[in-house]
Amino acid sequence: MTESAASPDRFRAILVLASTVGTIGFNILSALGRINSVTPADISNRYLTPITPAGYAFSIWSLIYAGLIAFSIYQFFPANLTKLRNIRMPYILSCLLNCGWIYAWHYDQIPVCFLLILFLALVLFRINSRLRSKDTPRDYWLVKAPFAVYFGWVTAAALINFAVLLAYLETGLSGEAWNGVALGLIAAAAVLGLLVRFTLSNYLYPLSIAWALTAVAVKQSGNTAIVVACAFAVVACLIATLSFVVNLPSHSASRTTAQ
Image 1 (spheres, rainbow, N blue to C red):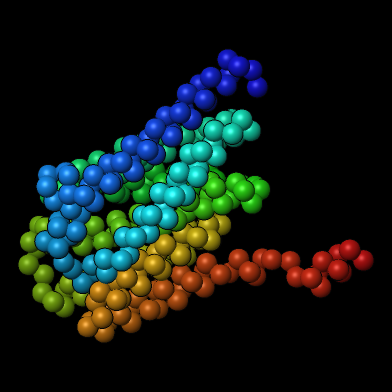
Image 2: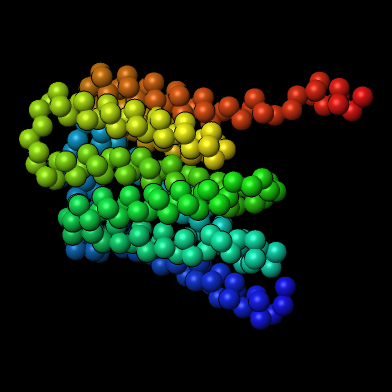
């Protein structure tokens, strides 16, 4: 690769790192209540629904951002400047959407939040679909894995945001109707977990959804229907995650092939 050909890729690689640092910094300001003098939890507590997760669920962001930092550094390696060029611009867009969602959330613009997180989920789907090719273990853990976890969490968050939108719009749903909506969203999360797992060969995506639904069950522990639905969905997602074991070659099969 010539120097002139590498220059645009190197510039975009710098933008990726800057976007990651900027997004994490904006999230820190958010957590400290420096945006509109509220925290994300303050807004969340205004719109409690039967699918609101326990607060600990959001600790997954630490894992997500650690993975994105690793990716942002790894994509600078000379061998990766060209190889990862097709996900850099979508990634930068995802950072802008992430920050946009935070800003809108802090200013109680729930409909805008829902549209932004839907768009973010679509962008992350696009990134994950471009990472389907099998590569080295290092590529998997430093590129594909972070985006798989991120995509799974944002998918669950988008479904939760839909419930928040209904609460924001004061739809006047009865308790039974709210339960029905929540059960439908839980089922949708499980179906998406299975679809993405098997269409994109993405083992970690359903694991993030399982994490989110476990937190929903913990928060809604007094609602038997929700807890049971979450339990079934979590088991389905965990089985989907662990199903990669079936594809591993056994020692006996390896010996037979060698003979």
